[in-house]
Image 1 (cartoon, chains in turn red, blue):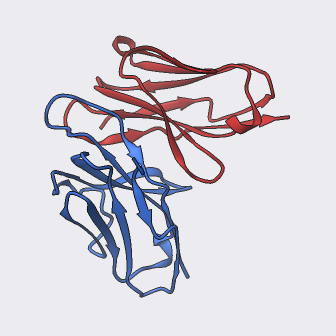
Image 2 (tube, rainbow over the protein chains, first blue to last red):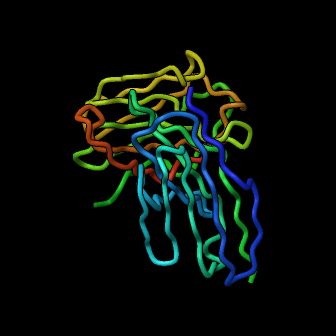
Amino acid sequence: GIQVEQSPPDLILQEGANSTLRCNFSDSVNNLQWFHQNPWGQLINLFYIPSGTKQNGRLSATTVATERYSLLYISSSQTTDSGVYFCAVRWNQGGKLIFGQGTELSVKP
Amino acid sequence: DAGVIQSPRHEVTEMGQEVTLRCKPISGHNSLFWYRQTMMRGLELLIYFNNNVPIDDSGMPEDRFSAKMPNASFSTLKIQPSEPRDSAVYFCASSPNIGTGEHYGYTFGSGTRLTVV
């Protein structure tokens, strides 16, 4: 089956710093989403981005489907950005959303 | 829209007891998914439904687990009998129809934290 790999697995930032999270996937996909799981366990959808670039405030994401990767950019990080960021992809067949193992981000004040 | 609603938020039960988790998807979403999250295995898909019909239950760990979707607005995940290794957070998610070629994002519920002692 399709493999989803995220890097780095852990990241510690000082408040105000910028960061880039990466997601590599092993096969063609027709859906890619980035989620933030906050310290309370809620999974919040950040971006639906099978291709192209999107921005939402301090966050932006780019997916290059032909090269099978996606990047999530966090600028001017805040302590509320802490949590685990998941990349998830859907195959060409079926509706399964396959998750990577996540990047655990900790933003220090 | 109230989003995907799961109940209960927390459940503590004794080994051997039956546990039922509930989910109400977003109105108009045709697909419903049950996921389980553990530290060891991450987020794994247990089963999903399209138009109330189970499409893929290959992720259901064993016969102790069963899921139903009697109508478009309600689904249950049942564990009978429960075991300590079933302790996890169980998420329900819904999305618009996957069969039309139009692919939209998933929305997740807040999860049910299950502890089996």
